[in-house]
Image (cartoon, rainbow, N blue to C red; front, side):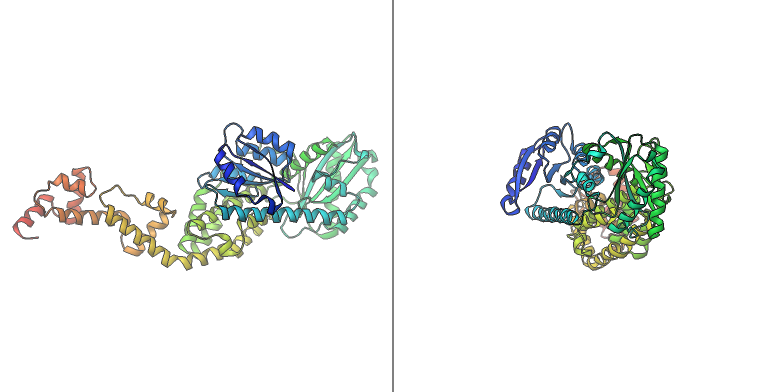
Length: 520
């Protein structure tokens, strides 16, 4: 049975999730529930669940801190974040620490069922990968099993200082780290054993434990001199390129004891070092800790995102293309790293998903791929060209086509609703910003749509309605001018009289006098 934990500070949310999960049908077992992050952390380390439901907002050790710890301690754990539309910062943290998926509060049964089906499929996929890897295991299969928490280091590594490294092609789609290539590379390096670390060292090479395109390795020696390690890995890079013509960068951990827990932490260090490669660097050797003190990453370009999403919503192909190019240029600037580019692209996918959901659609509907699938695809892309190609070939055309299909009818419907709202509530303080937010529509988009449909901007249209209503009320002699101003939405009578004169060309007194004399 696979084990599940539920973490939320609200008992009714925990009860609702637990009661909604079909435990027996899916072969799941409730390993425990927790109301705060510290208890959840300790319970997770003890129980080692397969699946975790996690609320991001909790007192004390909150969701993002817990997620970061568990990402390091239990890398195979599938985490489903429970959050809300407004938790943008928390969503970014969830993406950063590789949350599997997220659910919006209040959790709907059908959405929970979909997420559980995907989680079960992912756990099945991982088990199948482990089975296939075991069947085709080479000499270093123990190392992959160690990273998956299913083995210990061999006795020959005991007492040695170890560095874990992760190698990946600098361009997406060029990885060629098959079993034969790794075997030949290992044989080559072992033949040259005497040239490194006085001939006394150990080597392990393995495909990535998560089935990704990377190659994972470890080097162990009594004295793991940095200069020698650098020479050895540079030789590995050169030999790899000679065999398959592919340039690779390598992320390297700090030295650690050859113990299972230490090596798993070193693996995470090496991954982070590799993700810190600058996009313009090729065949780089990146050592953990070497980038400390580097300039802080630039903030996510949210204004560029909003401009791009607006262009998509408007169905403007040229403008969407132009805004996407500007957004990518911001994400992939002079000092940008692979990690920054990937995170930015993933955030953009989720922002687009939120926009589509507000219009009763989704990425899965318009382009056939769930945000999770696109997120995984982006995590495998390490160069700007491949990221841009994914958006330009699969995501943007589908989103534009959906906008074109929905645009006319949906736009007309929204504007009709706004016109009815103005007609019924012209005497209330109305703003386009609040109306747009209440309908989950971008304010700029609604402004352009309103002008395109009515020929007037929102403020002018509302003012015209108010002045027309005021003119009708002025035909009733018992109404005072200041009373009329308030009845049509103006608390400031002086301002109302100025607007009236501007719109009609007459003062209020002139208009009422003409009405009495029969001229209007």
